[in-house]
Image (cartoon, rainbow, N blue to C red; front, top):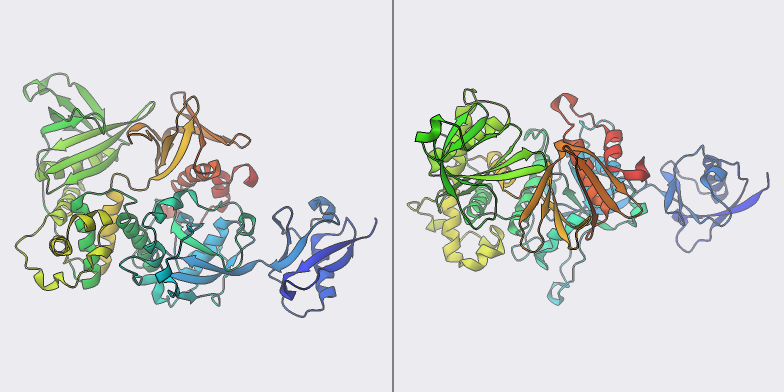
Length: 592
């Protein structure tokens, strides 16, 4: 074969150093090229972490047995010989920044596995990396220097065994609260809305950092991407729980997720508890049949109608009156497999149960409004059990009621408590969203937060954190990521809400839910990569298709496949992670 010259830039020699030219033939394998390159460089060092990067094609040459001909490399190829692991700055959910040594050659999914193993974060498949929003520095912020915790000396060992942590002594920055600038983390201080943008800035999990234009010492954010938190264990998940708490906390404070005023004060009270360290929680009891108000659809102006309801096994039936309950019901609703969520405002005496009922063409949304706390506690518990296929005779019915009553008790204010002594010590700006900071003066807001705190003052530090996450996950809009799309056959843009178990079509103009489809009714989905269109087929011969407006369709494809992958996990699998299945479900045509 003919011999020809191949020029390769050796990154370790510096930007000014000329490329090294080696004589090769087309049947020479990549490993042979590297051997010739190292010998000619005459640099003595460990080259085991180095690999060839093909600049024009934006890809790594990681198969040493492949020949230059098989790779398609000719004399005009621009190759760079560089380390596969480089320094990367990561912004954590608690607002702090760490510098780690990350893999730039493997898929982002695998890079995240390595980072999470080093930081002792279990279930790394729930997290990913995203590009931060560019921040415009104000003149007065010029001298603000960001503190970076350097962890580049911590080795990134094999990530095949995910159960053994690399960091046995955790840096305090990973489990402590962030330093606030003007009451807000530094990366949110300039723009309170920046965190909302990250939903469309996720990196592609199936491609490497280099392939996506990330350079050494660039800054990325590490965040929980998939809102399916499997196997939470406070004993093993100190870092994971703390970072998840901070991500939830700032999503609430920045109004990325909506909540009522009572819920906001409760979140504030639980944050105060994080400062005060105490223990214990409340519980109570029951009944089964009563009068309800019923609304068949959310966001209607007609309000509620009153009916007589009966609960039997895993179904509810409703009638015009108690007298007619011996006959045929107006409708019987089977709750098995449905979604049950609270819609409560204790101060306003609003006790609603939100039900998402599986239907052939998607999901029907139903709201039940109870008369009082007692009725709500019993019926909410019954609905939760029925959704799991359990009846009122199940042994967990009483404990479910007690848990709900405890939740309601935490939202009640306690006006008799004298909290004036600590009012001045509370920075209300860092405990509630701007909406309530503007609505109330500090002297009005502090007593409200402290009243809510009195109801959770007995919780331990860990229990308060877990309760915060529990209430966050119970919010109606929890776990939703939004993308603007154009449905096939439609002339207007709409919003697609992506949740852990369903897709939601939302009217962009008024915010109404138009339709809901569950993943467990999905038969198949595919992407036409040429026209960037996502097509999904559901049971009952229901088909939808849409193109994405504010994000690449790969992001939506990855969300759907990722959530389906999360649903396959079980406790029996322990720490085994089926990486191949994840890429099959999320990777698209490039991965397959």
